[in-house]
Every structure is written in C-alpha cells, then in structure tokens.
Length: 265
Image 1 (cartoon, rainbow, N blue to C red):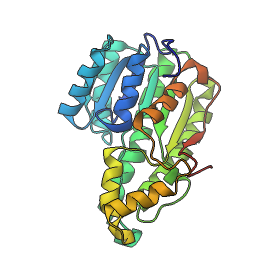
Image 2: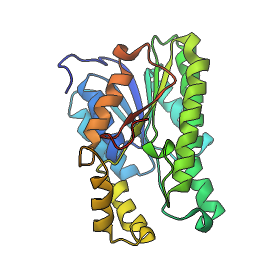
Image 3: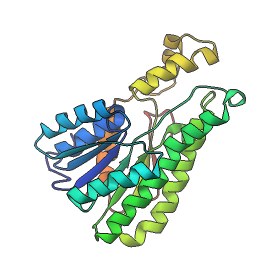
C-alpha cells in the first residue's frame, strides 16, 4: 500500500467488472482507503460475495447485477445508486472480455460482443456518471478505464480486443478534453500481462493459434517481459487507486502503460 492515509475517505466509487480480477482488486483498494463502493458485474453471486468482503472492511458496499452493454440496465442501476448515495465521485470501468481468433475467422457477432463490452459500455457509463458529477457539483471527479497494452501494439489473434481498447484510448482523450472544464479527470490504464482468469483463458485459446501448448505460450509471453513475470491484479489496482485520488487531479486524457517494460509507449 502506498500510504496509510485514507485517500478516498467517504467518497463513492463505482467499479464495473467488480466480481473478479483487476476490478475486484480495485474495489478492495477503494474500500481500504475509506470509500463506499458500488460493485457492478454480470455475475450476481460473485458480485454479492465480493461486496461482503468489502463490507468487512467497515465501509458500505452496494452490489448490482448489470449488463454494462445495456443502456436500460445501466440507467436502472444508476437510479438505484443515486437514490442511495446521490453523488458519484469515481467511476472505474473494469469490465472487459477478450476473444482468440484470427481476424479472418472472427464472426460479426463476436466482433460486436467484444466492442459492446469493452468500448460501448465505457461510453454509456461515462456519459451517465459524468452527468451525475456535473449535476451534483462533484469536486475533482475521476473516470478511469482499464485499456491494454494491446491498444498500442496490435496482437496476433487478438484483433477485436486490440481495436476495442484502442477505441478506449481515443474516447479517453475526448472525454478528458470535454470534461476538463468541470474538473473531471479521465484516464485509462494499459496493463500488460496480468495474472487473472482472463489471461489463463488466453493461454488456453491463443497458444494453439501460434502453434504452442498453453504452457509454452505462457512461457513465451512472460519471457518477452523485461521484468520476466506477469503483474498481479493488486499492482494494477494500486496505479488506478492513485489516478482515482486527489493526488492525480492534474492528470487527464492519457492512457498510461503498466507492463513491466514489455510495452514502453
């Protein structure tokens, strides 16, 4: 932990994809730093279990089952959040999915599914939450999105994901410019390989595309990282915690890489 100081004491932080991986790790960090946390995920049982862990830290947790690609479900969920907490201080867009196929093999339905979860949801949530921040005169609001190193260097067998995350970076720039006058900072984080369930699925599905077993593919990717290992979800969460705090008020519109040296742009 970077500091014993409660960086987010009393603030309301909303996290999508909060039931596992980086989203859950970030939700826990928010709670450790004094925030009340709204957890959104498509998996009802898992998000409710995560909320119980957060409540054990002495803060409020509101778990919500939400399909983040649906404006109807998002608006219904935000109505509930506003009814309970009124203003939202931080939005963290952590929901994301990947697919492992060569572009020539990607079906239109799969392309749309990846873009809807990874990019459309960021637009829908950021728009609604930014309006909440503006209407409630939130001081130094924050919107942070998980992008990827794949947004900056396209990856073989990962086309829809790479393209959708590049869209996240562009949307982050636009939102940063448009919301600056309201004191809302908007940034993205571009992780490299992170030790999550998603990356394990990548090893299983994309390894064969490149003629390797899942274990061989994991070893190959890890060997390309100068630090010779994957990141842990908590390491990404620490970086996002900083961007969510008052210490990052003058940082906006950028997509920052955290990849152990694998990607340095």
